[in-house]
Image (cartoon, rainbow, N blue to C red; front, side, top):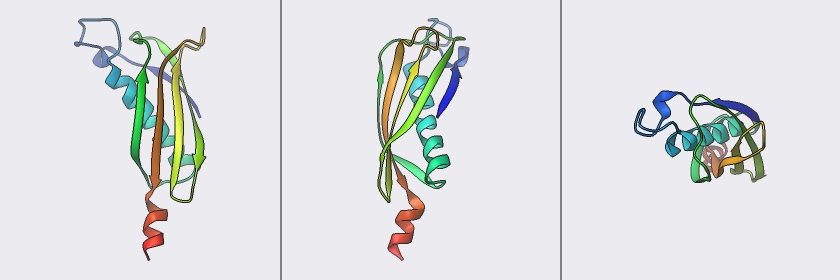
Length: 112
């Protein structure tokens, strides 16, 4: 899945103190992107069970970035995803993420 990302002033470090996005805002985008991918591709009823993000460079506010997310592997009950935020112009990577999501419906069904 590919998406566009643009963070405004509310996502800034210190609410206006710096022209860069807070790392937590970037991590939130990665968390939501991985969850939406799994909801669309495999399990509409899923939950993140583990997530690891790395902020490699601060992203500028009011700048458009590209978010790419893919399913790296999957089992009956879980999907492991990877995602990255990049500059669409030069390919510079700003943040990466690996997340594991559980298929709650499959887990519940196996308990019956």
